[in-house]
Length: 534
Image 1 (cartoon, rainbow, N blue to C red):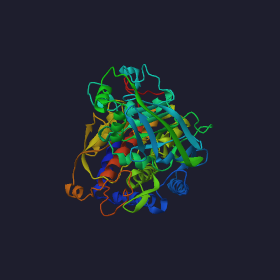
Image 2 (image 1 turned 45 degrees about the vertical axis):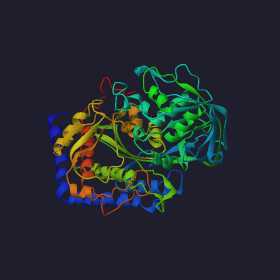
Image 3 (image 1 turned 120 degrees about the vertical axis):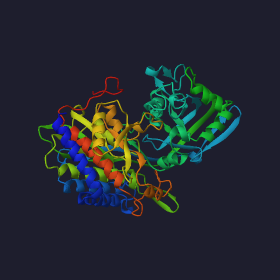
Image 4 (image 1 turned 90 degrees about the vertical axis):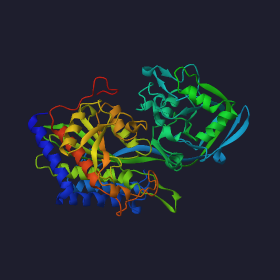
């Protein structure tokens, strides 16, 4: 990047910061952002569940907003990109799985002990009586000299795999407290399928998962959604799900195994997976099934001399819809997660559109579907990109960006993976903030939002946001402490929602995006990074 460009972009970022504090532009942008969050998170949008009537309402609203901003449709004249999905509502027969073991029998009750689902398009799931197999972390990672499946055949059996990876417990293994993709529960299910298992259960642990059992049950109690193949996912796991840790202890005891001894052994190199002396047959009734098209909503702002290269900005529009009531409220509005990100996408588009000098690269804005179901919309985009991923300079993703108070610094995650780190440091400095590099990610946040599908395809991403100390302690103390993640009380509340930090962070990403849009070369991966351009 030449010096003139660097200085001009620092001035843009500096103006954005000062505007946040005192100018009319800040007030107008906050009002724009608020209004769209309030709309998307209103009861009228029913929690934005894909493949429901509320999807139609949501995607039409987003497309209309893109059109009002003057963005062009990104998919051959359409703002919509279809993503074929299957939705199933399934329950184990009699809401239980009967287990017979060496020391008697027990019931794994749904949803207290297990939460299971299927993505097969069948009327009924029948798994014949088969063994449970404890496979430790359920990891096959040659680069870490770790294979929990070595020497054991799990074909047609039910595997139990611990969440996270060995580094969570031993800093000398894998990447220590910086979780690898092998630690994600989605990986456990993918590997179990590759190994030929009939079913897979991820053993829940609150610390290792970074969330409680209620998140598992909330996320999967209702309709579960997956991408749908032509044969209705006939080769998918017959069932998959979560096993409560306390129920797991009872299951191990029933099998004549010491739970603590086995799980401790699984954390060390050389662990050998064990076929448990416990068997079950699993019958699941598919109460409802729907195969249809969900949709990403995509628009483009063409560039100038580098218009055939792209930045793809994403935010997921979906949430959990209408489900079990909590304190009398059954609508999962998803105001922060992720009406705030979807509305931020609109505000970002507005800021790019209003630039006095047009950016060089084209900017694609994609509100993706079904993130809460496993990053499906972004997967659908990356498998069928509207613009070549080889020509996509970077992905900027917005997830749960508001509310947020101003902070003294900026956190940078996944530092050292690409050469965009310098852009983050420059943009933060223009705001008067210092960058703090996050060296530990035990919750695996790097793999938990839509940017990761782009990363897997070799497209660099930027992961940064507020960090350091909150500046206004009084406002921080006024924030209600009620739990909101994936709960009905994730609602917009004028009495305490604060946009000062959110706007500062959005302006940070805008400045970074502007630098990427105008620099001569596309961002590059570090030579030792796990992912490279394809």
